[in-house]
Image (cartoon, rainbow, N blue to C red):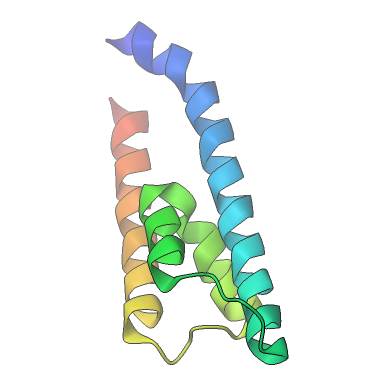
Length: 95
């Protein structure tokens, strides 16, 4: 089991990094679209990407772009997802 975790670790790290960059970028894109009255990114998409591992990028995007800060599912949900992801990462490391 340990060998499998060591093999998947780098791949998982790259996938999570990509998800976080994508989530951060989509937050910025959605903020610009909101200001310009253009087509928006669905909240469901933003929350799904955060739940799949992009919660850090979502939190940074929310704070950097001051976007979705009045929506409770983002204001409370993204930091809670981030805490969950950090707990899972700690559990993975301690295995």
